[in-house]
Image (cartoon, rainbow, N blue to C red; front, side):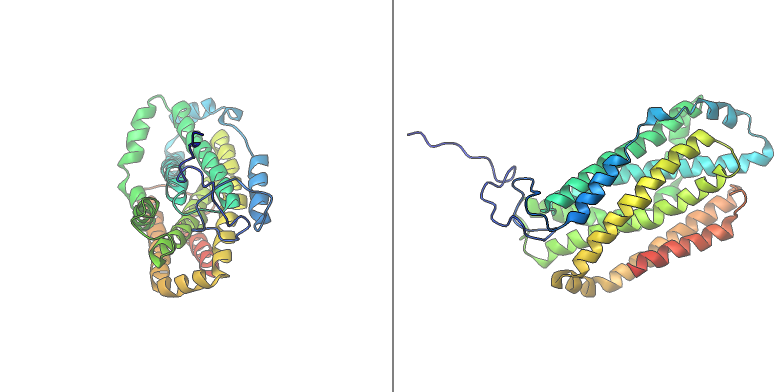
Length: 317
């Protein structure tokens, strides 16, 4: 009798024997997407909540903002500039998240629950990045000029220097794990999974939240309301789901022996990353202030205090 062909285990692990294993990372390669064994019901709850929050860019009409940007007077120019600078940063930041979460995570994640919730977050980040792109598309006569302006603000790119560097290292380790060049049971493999989770959390808890504060302040003036309403939906997704998923994953890993060992081994690096992230946020704040951008009714000192609050919360986690 002819022997039946089998599925490549890199695509589907038919021999998987650790269903119900509570590890989020680096268990046996994934097989059936499993809800029968459910060691992480909270992650499934986050998945369902994020699906329940789903929305679409066509819910917002950005065309009125075209006239607002055109007719901004000198007093309002600094407010418009702050809006454009933050839209550009948020566009970049959400694109990085959309491009990297499962590009990196797929090499490490073996939990069905975390795979599914991170997949949903990627879809959500695609929506966020698309929304910023649509805002630029409909709010300016020459959207490609704005796109090039966004890419030309090197201070915005520098804001993610630390995060992107460590994420890139984790990605390269992950590729080697998937290719069998690094043992998936090794400390090097786990360290990459752990540090990627830390990076993603800092991106969403610290970097994103600071920009939402600026847009929120502008919303209080009544300017650019369609944009502000769209960003409010994005901020809700990030604050209620993305950040809390990151907290859950880190706190779960810190409850395990290998997570605590990894944290102790890399504590200085994590502390240094936190300080670098805070410094980059303050540099971005100072760049916006010195370029003449205005946060109406709040001011840049208060934005600095909010940055410190976000960093303190991240360090508590």
